[in-house]
Length: 67
Image 1 (cartoon, rainbow, N blue to C red):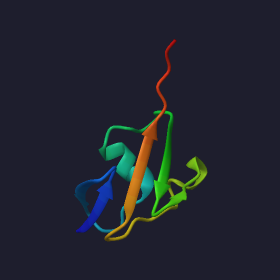
Image 2 (image 1 turned 180 degrees about the horizontal axis):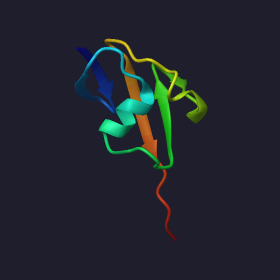
Image 3 (image 1 turned 90 degrees about the vertical axis):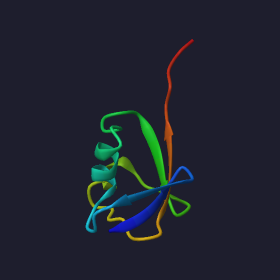
C-alpha cells in the first residue's frame, strides 16, 4: 500500500498505481482538470505513465463551467 495526500487529505492505494488509475478510483476520469504532483504540473498526456509513490502529494483542480 502507498499513502498519498490528495488536496490535503490522506488516501491509500495499492502499489503500482498511476495518475490515470487514481483519477478513475476518485471518479474523476474524463473530467476537465489540472493535476500537480509534488509541486509540478503533470500533463494529461502523461497520466497513464506517471507512476505514484508513497508520500506523493497531489493537488487536483476541476474546471467548472457556468455563467
